[in-house]
Image 1 (cartoon, rainbow, N blue to C red):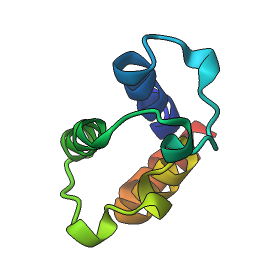
Image 2 (cartoon, helix red, strand yellow):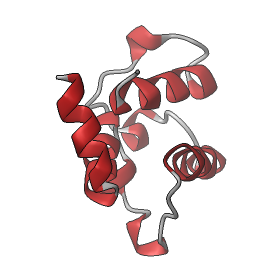
Image 3 (cartoon, rainbow, N blue to C red):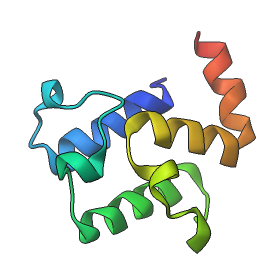
Image 4 (cartoon, rainbow, N blue to C red):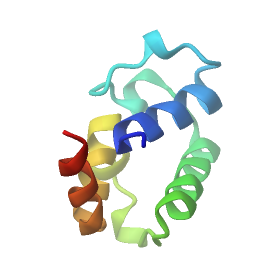
Length: 91
């Protein structure tokens, strides 16, 4: 089973980076690198909500939660505690 990081990376690379995985580091700021625009943010949020069966609240849509692969992984682990158990099993 892919990790949260792998799932997020795969989505971003496939939808926004035309398959160029080498151009994405886990701590790269999506805002600074211009990885996607406001429509892309909506696509990312939709992916997260569907993939992880969650609903993101307006106050959660901040760079601290969504601005890099690492931020997204940490945010999801806080938002969905059951993901922590899955991550621990995979390590």
